[in-house]
Image (tube, rainbow, N blue to C red):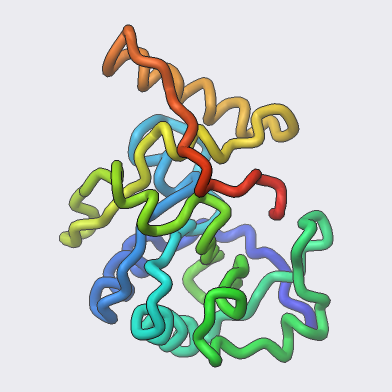
Length: 190
């Protein structure tokens, strides 16, 4: 049976608390992160970039197994699993390529993005710490979020880009948003 995207908003409090309890190191990215800086449409999934050491990926894979996570088959994405492969998927072996999927869980959609938003190490250089649900969470810097938006193609990204650029201008009227740098792959694999 193919797993499809769920219209339910992700339970951010659950994900933040459970990842912290499991000791998973990550940076919150995507619309999840942007929603903590500016008013945008509600995130459809919980986006995160994990630290990709073997022990950290094993902790993340254990969470995914406990949650009953399954990749979502997305024919509109360049890289996706077939419905059959998504149904047969398991989180182990806990390797970057194995976990790099948007997944359906009972707590909403959960998106593991090890490289598309930039590596964990790159994002940590400017990540901000915010207290969410009693947990300190690293949130990607607004400029790193801007660098991955596809405002030329997606309307939701155009709106987020405008809001994040406005935030940068309010915080430092003379500042220019700089790209995240050469470590960030060209968005579009998803």
